[in-house]
Length: 455
Image (cartoon, rainbow, N blue to C red; front, side, top):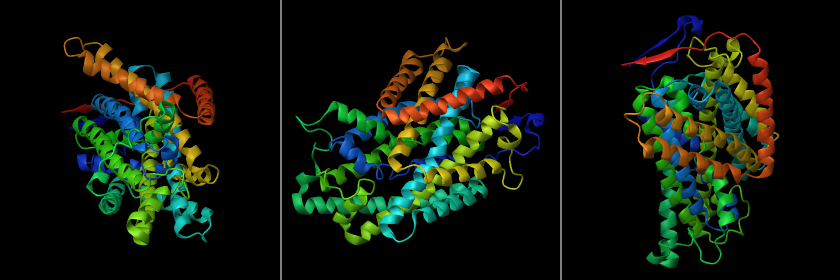
C-alpha cells in the first residue's frame, strides 16, 4: 500500500513514516491505557460502587468494545492522522469535526497530566521526602525527550514497559490466588460478591462508578491517530483497537476481582488513590508493595509518553488541515519526522497542569472530552456505513446501524453520569472552542489536505 500526499500542502516534503506493525499498535494501545489501568482507580471506584468494581469494569468494557469497532471501521475508510476529528468532520460536518477534535484535545492534554499526577503520588508513597514538584518536572522532561526521538523509539520504549507491567501483574495474580486459597480454600476463589450482592447492590452507585471505571479503557482511540504511521492501516487499526479493549478488559477484571476478595472491606483503605499497593502488600509483603509502586511509576511514564504522542499527532492533523495555525501545529521535524513543536507544547502543558489538578478531578475532565468524541465517532460510523451513498447493496442494519447506535447510547449514559464539576469545566472548554472556530471561519482557508491510499 502506498500513500500520496499533495506536496504543495506538505510544504517541506517531510512525511510520517509507515513503520508500525499490528503488534506495535497493540503494544502502543495497551501501554497507553495500561495493563494495570484499573489499578489507580481501584480504591475510588470500589468505594463508589460499594464493593462491586468488577461489574463496573465489565460494563465499561461493553461500551468501549462497541466504540472500538466504530473507530476501527472508520480507520479503514479514513486512514489518516486526526482520528475522531477526521471521521466526524468527513462524515457529518466540518464544524462538528472541529468540535470533536477540540474535545479530543481536552482528552489528550489531560492524559499526560493525569499520569504525571499519579506517578508523583506513587513516588510519594515510596520516597515521601522528595517534593511533588520535582517529580512533575522529571516526568514532563522524560516523556517529552523520548517523544522527540521519534515514533519508533516510542514503540520500543513501550514494549519494554509492557513486559515489566505484565510481569508484576502476573506476580500479583499468582500471589493473590495463593493468599485466598490459604485462608478460604478453593471455594474462596469463586464468588459473586465482586459482581453483585443481593440487597446491597445499588444501580445508581454502579452507574456512577462505571463513569470512573471507563477510565480503564481511555486512550484506545489513540491507536487511530497513528494510522498514517501504520503498515496496512485498513486491516491493522481495526484489529488493534478491538484487541486492546478485550485484553484490557479481561486483565483488569481479573486484577480487581482478586483484589476485591483479598480486601473485601472497601471502607478501610488507608489511601484511596494507592489502595491497590496496600492490597499488594497484603498478598505479597513489602517486595510486592514496592514492585507495584515501581510498575505504577513505569506505567505512568509509558501512558504519559503515549498520550503525549497522540496529542501531538492530533494537533498535527488539525494543523495540517488549517483548523489550527499550520506553520506551528502542522510542522514536522526533518530529523525524526515527528511534530516537534507540538511535542514541546504538550510537555509545557503537562508540567503546568499537573501542579493545579488532582487525580480524581483530572480523570473526570478526561472522561468528559473522551466520551463526547466517542459519541461523535459512533454517529459518524452510522452515517458512513448505513446512510452513506452507495452502501445499499452491502449495508447491514445490525452491523452498520445498531452497533454504532448502541455505542452512542452507552457512551451517552456514561457521560451523563459524570459529576457536575467535570461537565462545567468541559462546557467551558467547548465554549472556548466555539469562539475559536467562529474566529477561524472568518479567515480565508486553502482547500483541505488530500491524502489517498491505493493498493
